[in-house]
Image (tube, rainbow, N blue to C red; front, side, top):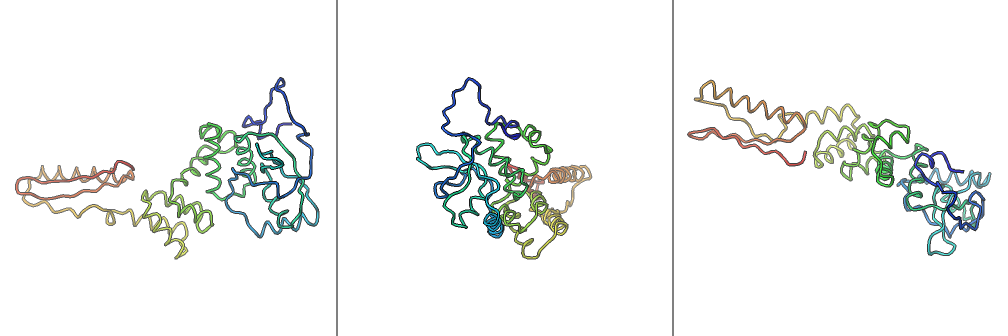
Length: 287
């Protein structure tokens, strides 16, 4: 029987006319040597809590394996298997030094294996926001989906998916802090507003060192982005120019401020020459 999320993502659908070469029952629980199993190469979870693994191991030791792991055979490797689902259980059994583990063998492609691993973890809602964002990115790539289509299949809003994916554009240091739960997702989303990796990392360290909350972080960002802290050179006062020229210059300055308000970092330099007034404007190609 095809699992619900398999139907949603079109996994595991076999044509009735397609020949089956299975030498085992796909739903049969068998005992496999623990040493013959390798972790899932597509596992989205980057951090496993040793404390929770120990707690799970104690439960398994007391009550046994209630739910078997799911594996697939490795091509070209005799008696070798790759995990599809159940890595925490497999790690717990390893810590107990058991020789065998209850398992179900399934036939799956790399895409199917990756998708099932990602979806299983997303359903558990135990991933960090960065692991969740990475899982979304991989599903979009593996299944060739749009953000809207992925949101519909996972029962989430498109904006929720988009907000998570934006976190992957942050510097590695910020993403690692999220993984380690040193900052919250709201801290990270505030840092996105800076649009400058160096400033983002600098403020990240300040958040951690001073234990800034989200409101304090947003206030700090507002100060960093204020005109007094921008890279614009101090504007010289217009002297000896008629009213029309002053109006023209002020209009240009106001226009530059409007561009800056959109998040584009504009640098300007004003110089008063003998016969003319010179303004040099630098606008980065990338926002």
